[in-house]
Amino acid sequence: MDFHWETITGVNLILSAVILALGLVGYGLSRKIASLYIGLAFGLFGFSHLATLMGKKDSWEYELVAVRSVGYLLVALALYRVVVAVKKEAAKPARSPARARPRKSG
Image 1 (cartoon, helix red, strand yellow):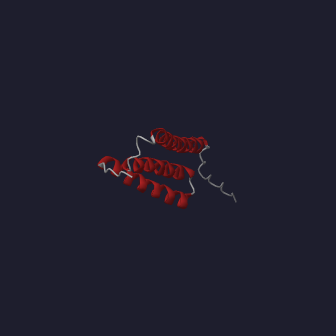
Image 2 (tube, helix red, strand yellow; image 1 turned 90 degrees about the vertical axis):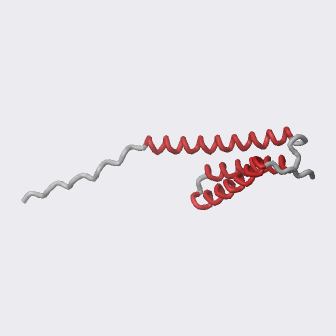
Image 3 (tube, helix red, strand yellow; image 1 turned 45 degrees about the horizontal axis):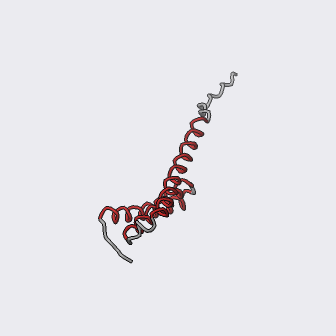
């Protein structure tokens, strides 16, 4: 293996790992699938950054394009699910204010 440190790629790897961890923790706490999708996407991005640092960028070119493409699709899917959920929530009828009870006469 030919490890070649590149600062930008190394920082991207570290940040991808942090977002992966936050996505997994967020999913564990909320069970919101969008958190899981985004975390997994950044895990894939991190894998591609690691492969680049390990000198595999040229020999794994097509595989890395596929990995990154899947990552972007996961982010797009997560954002789509968030938009659908927000639109669904906005379409719900607003709750009416509590009605005042009529007074009893007498």
